[in-house]
Length: 105
Image 1 (tube, rainbow, N blue to C red):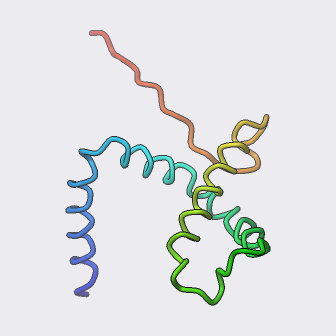
Image 2 (cartoon, rainbow, N blue to C red):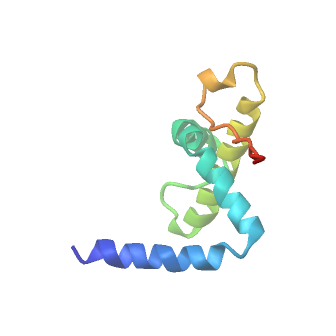
């Protein structure tokens, strides 16, 4: 009962700080738009990432943040490349951009 109001208050404060930074806002928007695709493909990316010989992702907590960022970036890039394929909406759901309609009275 206590955690939810605190979380929502921190989320509102975070939003007020983020909305002034366009690069951060665009980055978070792309991650939000690709979130379902990231969810679907990240396990495959982690499996490939763990096969690289110089990466110790399992037992090394000091590389967790770097590994997280690498997996997220590769996932976003993969979803972007998949979205360029024909009929990609059947593979990964990506919301389309809404057109702004100007009403003339």
